Length: 112
Length: 111
Image (cartoon, each protein chain N blue to C red):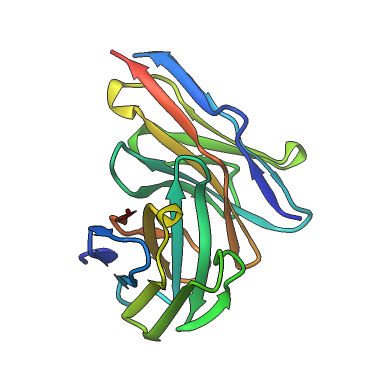
């Protein structure tokens, strides 16, 4: 299995631009999670899905952030408009049931 | 409210020293507990997990953790660390269907 796949691995964009991060979970996993990691705030859960349905989005910082999971093999996290304080590493993770999560390699986002 | 606490934010050890990283949780119900490791520049990887049964759990790379219910703790241990264990270690708890991560402990092992 290829593991959790994220793209792009690095993204540099200007403030105000729209950013879309993509994630392909491990086949057969029914949970998908989006996290943000920064030096200042550590690892933060943004949102998670179960069977493609958003269960808890209380970690989404504000309306500029949105996440979708149109099918079991694909999810997106969109930031519109982006701001410099959104600069972070964004991780996607998946799991089969309430077991340990498998993390993707992350997307390093820099907003200038 | 549920929480996971890691009290040691930074730990520095010499090679061959023993390691114990603390993890405490706050929750009145059944909890599943995990330790993850993040090597520099990489993503988090699952080290070990506890669901039920034997409270002493053995994971990969010689790590183990002990669940002590009376102390609400799940400390990570390794008898002899190596330089390659330099990483950040995260404790996490699954409370219902929500996973909460601790703030992490950065371990630096001196060669």
